[in-house]
Amino acid sequence: MTNKNFTMWRTILIAGIVIGLAGIVGEMIWNADNGQLKRVELIGMATSTRITIDEAVEKALENIVGQVIVAELEKRGGKTIWNVEILTTEEAIVAVSVDAVSGSVLMSEEKAAGKRPVQDKTS
Image: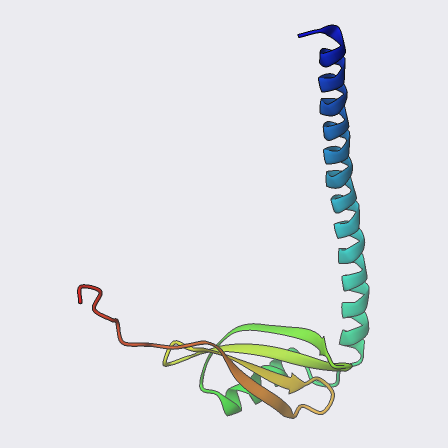
Protein backbone atom coordinates (compact mmCIF):
# COMPACT_ATOMS: atom_id res chain seq x y z
CA MET A 1 0.00 0.00 0.00
CA THR A 2 1.34 3.39 -0.90
CA ASN A 3 1.81 6.18 1.59
CA LYS A 4 -1.02 8.15 -0.06
CA ASN A 5 -3.49 5.23 0.32
CA PHE A 6 -2.41 4.68 3.93
CA THR A 7 -2.99 8.35 4.74
CA MET A 8 -6.43 8.27 3.09
CA TRP A 9 -7.54 5.16 5.04
CA ARG A 10 -6.17 6.57 8.28
CA THR A 11 -8.12 9.80 7.70
CA ILE A 12 -11.33 7.84 7.01
CA LEU A 13 -10.80 5.75 10.15
CA ILE A 14 -10.17 8.81 12.34
CA ALA A 15 -13.20 10.60 10.87
CA GLY A 16 -15.36 7.54 11.58
CA ILE A 17 -14.15 7.36 15.17
CA VAL A 18 -14.79 11.09 15.71
CA ILE A 19 -18.29 10.88 14.22
CA GLY A 20 -19.07 7.78 16.31
CA LEU A 21 -17.87 9.38 19.54
CA ALA A 22 -19.80 12.58 18.77
CA GLY A 23 -22.94 10.50 18.30
CA ILE A 24 -22.42 8.65 21.59
CA VAL A 25 -21.69 11.80 23.57
CA GLY A 26 -24.58 13.64 21.90
CA GLU A 27 -26.96 10.80 22.78
CA MET A 28 -25.82 10.84 26.41
CA ILE A 29 -26.35 14.61 26.65
CA TRP A 30 -29.75 14.41 24.92
CA ASN A 31 -30.91 11.60 27.23
CA ALA A 32 -29.78 13.52 30.31
CA ASP A 33 -31.76 16.60 29.24
CA ASN A 34 -34.75 14.47 28.30
CA GLY A 35 -34.77 12.78 31.71
CA GLN A 36 -34.49 16.11 33.53
CA LEU A 37 -37.41 17.57 31.59
CA LYS A 38 -39.41 14.45 32.34
CA ARG A 39 -38.83 14.88 36.10
CA VAL A 40 -39.91 18.52 36.00
CA GLU A 41 -43.02 17.60 34.00
CA LEU A 42 -43.81 14.74 36.39
CA ILE A 43 -43.57 17.04 39.42
CA GLY A 44 -45.95 19.48 37.73
CA MET A 45 -48.43 16.70 36.96
CA ALA A 46 -48.21 15.27 40.49
CA THR A 47 -48.95 18.62 42.12
CA SER A 48 -52.05 19.08 39.95
CA THR A 49 -53.69 15.79 40.98
CA ARG A 50 -56.40 15.41 43.59
CA ILE A 51 -56.50 11.61 43.45
CA THR A 52 -53.66 9.64 45.04
CA ILE A 53 -52.18 6.56 43.46
CA ASP A 54 -53.93 4.41 46.09
CA GLU A 55 -57.30 5.97 45.26
CA ALA A 56 -56.70 5.46 41.54
CA VAL A 57 -55.86 1.79 42.14
CA GLU A 58 -59.05 1.36 44.19
CA LYS A 59 -61.15 2.92 41.39
CA ALA A 60 -59.50 0.69 38.78
CA LEU A 61 -60.07 -2.45 40.86
CA GLU A 62 -63.76 -1.53 41.22
CA ASN A 63 -64.04 -1.94 37.45
CA ILE A 64 -61.62 -4.80 36.74
CA VAL A 65 -60.95 -7.70 39.12
CA GLY A 66 -57.32 -8.74 39.34
CA GLN A 67 -53.88 -7.79 40.59
CA VAL A 68 -52.31 -4.40 39.90
CA ILE A 69 -48.94 -4.72 38.19
CA VAL A 70 -48.26 -1.07 37.20
CA ALA A 71 -49.70 2.30 38.20
CA GLU A 72 -48.21 5.48 36.80
CA LEU A 73 -49.08 9.10 36.21
CA GLU A 74 -49.38 10.16 32.56
CA LYS A 75 -50.47 13.10 30.44
CA ARG A 76 -52.96 12.29 27.66
CA GLY A 77 -54.69 14.85 25.52
CA GLY A 78 -53.94 17.63 27.98
CA LYS A 79 -55.36 15.61 30.90
CA THR A 80 -53.43 14.14 33.79
CA ILE A 81 -54.44 10.53 34.32
CA TRP A 82 -53.43 7.53 36.37
CA ASN A 83 -52.76 4.56 34.09
CA VAL A 84 -53.34 1.39 36.12
CA GLU A 85 -52.49 -1.97 34.53
CA ILE A 86 -54.19 -5.01 36.03
CA LEU A 87 -53.46 -8.71 35.53
CA THR A 88 -56.86 -10.41 35.43
CA THR A 89 -57.71 -13.96 36.52
CA GLU A 90 -57.82 -14.87 32.81
CA GLU A 91 -54.17 -13.74 32.61
CA ALA A 92 -55.02 -10.72 30.43
CA ILE A 93 -53.52 -7.33 31.07
CA VAL A 94 -56.08 -4.52 31.15
CA ALA A 95 -55.12 -0.84 31.29
CA VAL A 96 -57.54 1.37 33.19
CA SER A 97 -57.31 5.17 32.82
CA VAL A 98 -58.45 7.11 35.90
CA ASP A 99 -58.80 10.90 35.80
CA ALA A 100 -56.25 12.25 38.30
CA VAL A 101 -58.47 15.20 39.24
CA SER A 102 -62.02 13.81 39.37
CA GLY A 103 -61.25 10.15 40.03
CA SER A 104 -63.62 8.96 37.31
CA VAL A 105 -62.68 5.99 35.15
CA LEU A 106 -62.17 7.31 31.64
CA MET A 107 -61.60 4.03 29.80
CA SER A 108 -60.20 0.54 30.01
CA GLU A 109 -58.56 -1.48 27.29
CA GLU A 110 -57.05 -4.92 27.02
CA LYS A 111 -53.31 -4.61 26.41
CA ALA A 112 -52.46 -8.33 26.26
CA ALA A 113 -54.83 -11.21 25.68
CA GLY A 114 -55.40 -13.79 28.35
CA LYS A 115 -55.50 -17.59 28.28
CA ARG A 116 -55.93 -19.07 24.83
CA PRO A 117 -56.16 -22.69 23.76
CA VAL A 118 -52.84 -24.12 22.62
CA GLN A 119 -52.88 -25.08 18.96
CA ASP A 120 -51.59 -28.47 17.90
CA LYS A 121 -48.49 -27.79 15.79
CA THR A 122 -48.30 -31.33 14.41
CA SER A 123 -51.28 -30.96 12.09
